[in-house]
Length: 415
Image (tube, rainbow, N blue to C red; front, side, top):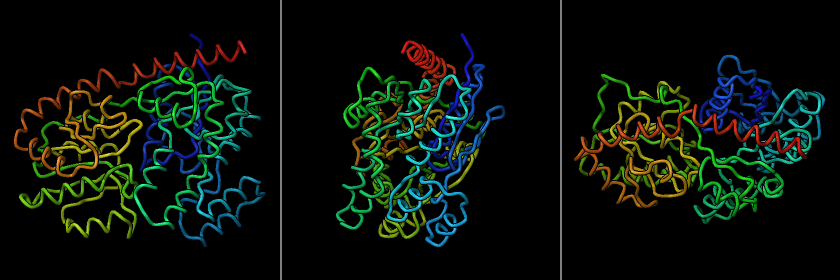
């Protein structure tokens, strides 16, 4: 098979916090190992990439590096030779919008007008107007991890405050663009059947245009550490605090119930709370400040260490297009308790406990059940790691990606 020149587009690729930077790093490396030349074209913040992967920086104003109006204004003023996208980005952010998807798509389209040495373009979920233009000149594969309409709906349902609801409508105004663009994209890849069903329903896309390919995991990076003792009082979860669909509230409420009989029990949260935000207030209200530990901006090595010293991993999400924390925990042989929603049952199968969402009593009950019969659940967790190795290894996943890339190129040439 012909080795390809591939451009992967990513409107932002933070190394920590959220899965986009992780996905870009992993998929670019996996494709390069198959012999393809891979460039990552990214807006800020930029990803950490493996050796041999070229990073092409496509800077915008990077206004979400700060939430200070003064700092944002300085960024805007200092930008030389301002474009229409710069003006749109500044004023949209000023009124509470999130314009990066649209402006990055326009910048990527302009860049690819002058840089045509690519066989195929992969876009990581910008679903922006620029992709329609790029699709006319290049074979294009759009990655949609899940429709962001779900995030929007969960955030609206999480509050009765009118001011907050208005802010959510402004922030998610990019969905107007995505709903127009998505049905026009001819090749879409998504990581789960649940996400595929959501894309068809929410974005009105043709089912035949969507291929399900699971995300991969480096099971050697996420592996149990031998000769390290698990803390019987330690629980672990990954959650972007103050994001409603992650369901962190219910893990915290379960911790409150567990604390009555076990004052030493504690929850490690990989993530960071918003200062003076909902999560910090809830922790204080529940009087569990001494039982919650946040870990932010930490390496994969440190995450692996935390999994290896924890007794139970919790995923209390209300929705997951593809739950990286699920397979990371399973790969580290941590007994898992997760919600029985969206993609999670596809990933977990019989290798963890699945419970109804929004039920802290069931969650606390099952945590106690696992701790009281730990050897049985530990044996199942060991089988769960083997399931991850067989199902989510990058060799298998990359081969599936290659098939869709070659198919997209062939289809483009015929057109």
